[in-house]
Amino acid sequence: MADDPLSTTFAALADPTRRAILARLAEGAATVKELAEPFAMSGPAVSKHLKVLERAGLVTRGRDAQWRPRALDATPLREVAEWTDGFRRFWDDSHRRLDAYLERMKEQEDDH
Amino acid sequence: MTTDTASAWSTPTDVEVAVTRTFAAPQRLVFEAFTKPEHIVHWMLGPDGWTMPVCEVDLRPGGTWHMVWRRADGTEMSMTGEYLSVTPHSETVQTEAWGEDWPETVNTTRFVADGEQTTVVQTMKYPTREARDRALQTGMKDGANTSYDRLAEYLTAQV
Image (tube, rainbow over all chains, first blue to last red; front, side):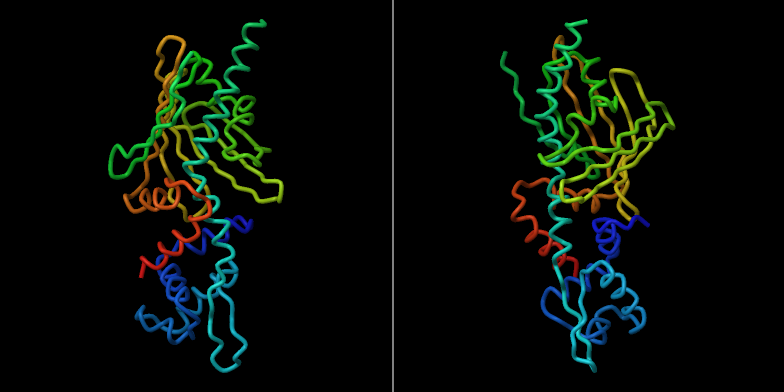
């Protein structure tokens, strides 16, 4: 797997259960048990998803030794948003740049 | 000369998104600008601040392409794909993927000659309507500052 931060974030987001976990954590911190409840999933299965989210820096563990509540860290999402928001902007800006570049191409052809 | 320089976005089918743009240059030139690395690296860069340190294009059916974009802070994005068909100066069909677990699109680019102008129609086909709508939801609206909020909304809507 590619190990640049954006790829790690996307891989973590590419699963509906993990997105649902993030959505739940967007409302506030929760324990593994609380997170497992809506999914009809075992604690270990949820823990596995949480590990992926933690590796991506999207979820942090609280200090409470007994409950270790998980919380959302949205920082990596900003980078994702910056990139995905660029989808339309990417082509609009590129096309605008191409207008100018095609003028250069035409001039170069005329010189030959 | 007056040219309408706005890119027109549309959704031709449930799984597609298309952008149409007319350029003031002949078809062959525009086709080369889209398909030759020596040209691509100068313009296919998106917003200011990105460069393309890697651009490999094997322009033939079955040939692969690979592009890497880099920002000054070191952030990189890469895309890879394969050409499914190539009709010189008028059409290319290629797959495009930007990472594991992310839906691969099939992109058709048509170059329609109109005298000294060329209209380019880029159609991106997603595997599912959901995948397309996700791309549209985050990417088709303007405003980088609000996209973070939209992503949060999107995450909440998944519950």
